[in-house]
Image (cartoon, rainbow, N blue to C red; front, side, top):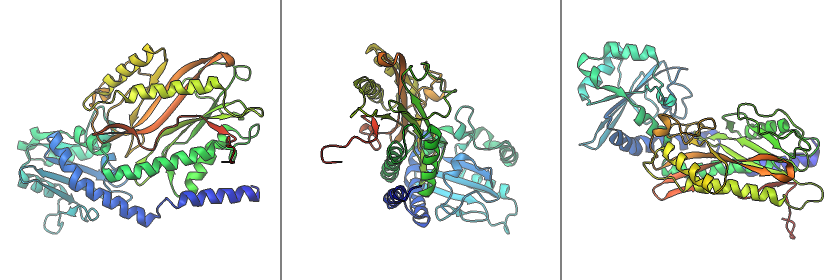
Length: 445
């Protein structure tokens, strides 16, 4: 790498690093957020779902994905067999948070098992259940919501073998509660989410610039690995490998729309190319998922061609139609079908495949279409839209480009928040094509 390029890279790294906490500070923030979620959010969710006792059981290195989001910041895994019990007494407006484990579960959940007094962990759990006599006992099993299906068969069988018979009919799936825990964001988390998406946008902007791309030399794979290295240098992680792909005139590429399961391989980036990326990062136990577009200017061009700018605007229009239909209580399928109908009535050719985003990249909540299920998604798509939830607004519209003698896809993905005041993008959205190189104004900006 040339000395000048290396200096530019270091400056960019420092600019981003100033906004990213060191590990010790991250741990403090994570534990503070967990305390707020346990003490304030969880009682609301238990009341909403009608589950007064929730039990999560995991063994080390085989963690329930819901329990994983509850781990104290200094715990990277569960310890031995970890059992957590939450009991909500709505009449007294209290919530108990107990760990049937040899250790306190961080500072938020205290140990309720003295092995010297009761050697059996399972028997101690049963004592706690009988002392509280819950109306329902929620366990994390679910046929359709994978993140809410974290209780393994061995632990389920052992639990049921120890459970007093009178409680057997009170055992229910905790799926609505588990999904609510995973999908719901607190006010403080949303402040952090804005920063996280901003960092994501910054990395994409740098990747799709002359700092990284030299037309005729740089390949799509080069850009993908640059993004991975950038994230690692910042002390962050990606939750999936980035992808970068190209759409261009049929004079250079036999025109066809690739399927989502068969994306094109490595390509050299050339002037006149329309670039697209899919990229997401993980920070403070939240995840982003973003797709943006850039155009590689030809030597004589000062801006992208009007036909691409017009196609881009069609993609923004599909976003507007879709997010304007977000209504609390509506299902993902209802929102999907209404949006597709409206977009098609305007002559657009949309495809919508939006998913929950937050504690996981492909998170739990309502599903609003899949790329291969535009008629709706059974069960997961019938789950209602709740407030204080985040979605990867993922969709595309197909546009015919006569100048290129082919169809192209305008593909977008942006984090969007649905709250009591309706929908908003977490950190804005792309409204015009990035250009390589950047187009400077008369002041050189």
